[in-house]
Length: 311
Image (cartoon, rainbow, N blue to C red):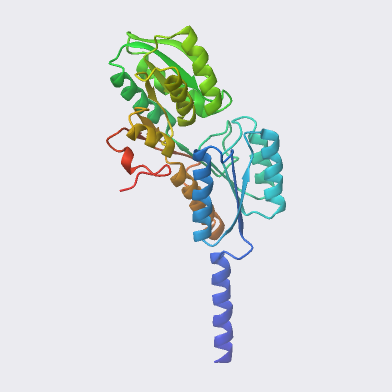
């Protein structure tokens, strides 16, 4: 009996080892742009909450869209013994070396929100279907504009893949309407203050604009503030992200629509896939994963909370 008990104990110990349970030392590093942007703050909070639910310790770090700082933070995560990195990166090209460095150190990366220009280095790239979302926003914008009039496009950071994808999605719809005239297209680098300044300048050159379509909600808020300051209360503004600030503006009759990209859920999914990778040695079925976006208008804005639609 003693031998049987001993053998059973060995078998149980082996099974436990194969299951790779989370230990107190298991750490996930979450690295995002600045939390001053509510979108990135929601990502960080979503990832941290899910990681803690699954029993992990978390370090949450901010790279401020600085690729050099991002590289240093990846070094920090490796040095701290992180078992996985959840990353909203600082540039499609500039990030490749940092993700490769983590992989070579045995630390898998799970990218969210922004892709990199390389495959087979990150274990997952989970992003919103920016093209699909942009087409949703553009169709609503065209409808609100009555399919005619002069409009402005505010574009995100040029080094960010999402900026180009969203702009292409917008124009693949809007360019079909011959009476919709793009009079100005400028980058405001995802920034609310920069969008405000750019919008002030654009209004001086084009006081007759009828609409503004923006690559994200932060720039939409800056544009809306500049328009309000100039007394242009009838100019149609459409954003992209699904922030609480734009939700509130929509409900007050300001900004007319936005496109929700599920930032909170993307971050949680990245953590769940990291967890599966660590516990069960299970890799995601595909590296690149798209999550569809949802159009937000006055009809459903009341259900929007922290980049999620509440049922």
